[in-house]
Length: 140
Image (spheres, rainbow, N blue to C red):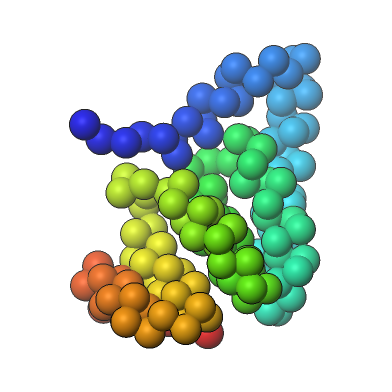
């Protein structure tokens, strides 16, 4: 049986108990704005701001699946860059084999393992990422 756990973020919006469609739309817009700010911080390697912006957006349940998956990978990289390895791996563990960005997930795992000094695990994760996408860039 497939694990569709991370797709639950889509259904959370319909059962969140929000007061109305305008409130729901505002909450969704806020989450997406936080993702954009977090991704801008990620691009400039400001990992503290990245985590501060992406963590609540990812947890909100208001993101589309592709945005959720990419934001979760970037959040994991930010956590690992800050030495929060358990949080980084936990974030990546929330993404299942059904996620659309599997190569990025394995590349992110490689980064976390490399930061932990686990070179064997890092190499294996990067190899898996490159098997899925030979052009995948290694996170630095």
